[in-house]
Image (cartoon, rainbow, N blue to C red):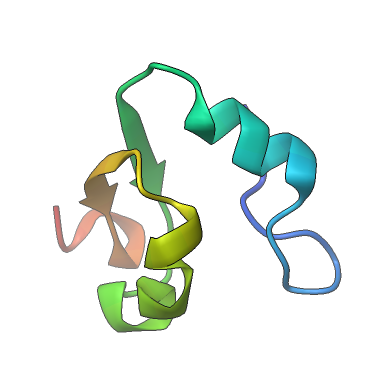
Length: 57
């Protein structure tokens, strides 16, 4: 398991590479989907979001 954002609020290359492999990617986050929109281009393999601490799936 990897934290999506590093201390600079960026997605690390290591995390991007892990996500880019042929896997089903599910993001579990306390953030809402609007906060993640700016990252959709670099997270094309994300299939599912579990947001707002599970309030939105």
